[in-house]
Image (tube, rainbow, N blue to C red; front, side):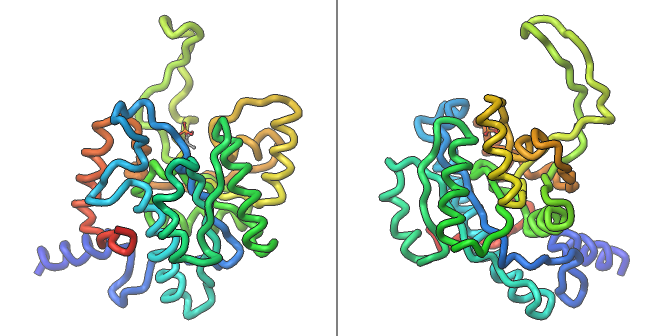
Length: 281
Ligand SMILES: C[C@](O)(CO)[C@H](O)COP(=O)(O)O
């Protein structure tokens, strides 16, 4: 009996639902949230001959996991939760190198008005700007918030997405993250330690990063005018001096960067026994 109870609890924790099959977290209205999926990178650290977002993970390219989540699983989740009070997301922009776009045209055609391409910029911020402009255009101003996600983070969960959207709606901007486990040292020259940053203050941030569109547009202007270097999206909000909520995420939301990350991601998906991504195969 104890073993049965334990295994039921484990399963329910994994699925994040109670015994009635309802989720244990709140599902926000996603009707005014658009998704920008960044898949324009070259993945040079992977040394795989092709960008990491196209490498096979559980039989489908890495980026399909996020596409499937935003276009199918999250939509199903919103429809089946909160008794119809959470409308599903309607707009997804896929930022992708024009070289690869023809290969993905048939997938885009399967979601008319819901999925569109944007071209990458030179840096991350350029790609985000292009994706955001496309989102504003395709949603005809309906989207108030943008959720920016790295296609190299295929393990993000519906619960994490719901939590970060809830926080962004309350605070204007929110980012998924986890407290740092390692001690982080700073170096000026890459050879010697300059200082150690108190670990209790450090968070490793992930994506999606969810931001009010109006704020992000304002932030882009400041970043361009002051030539600021930003490596993530909420930095733009920080530059404006506006608050960014840290939403506690999962350590499993890793960014596939080097070859061993693929093995870890495969193992996590195997452990979750997650539903296969077959609609895009
Ligand atoms: C946004 C990010 O995932 C936060 O950890 C990270 O900064 C992205 O870096 P990338 O070099 O644009 O992949």
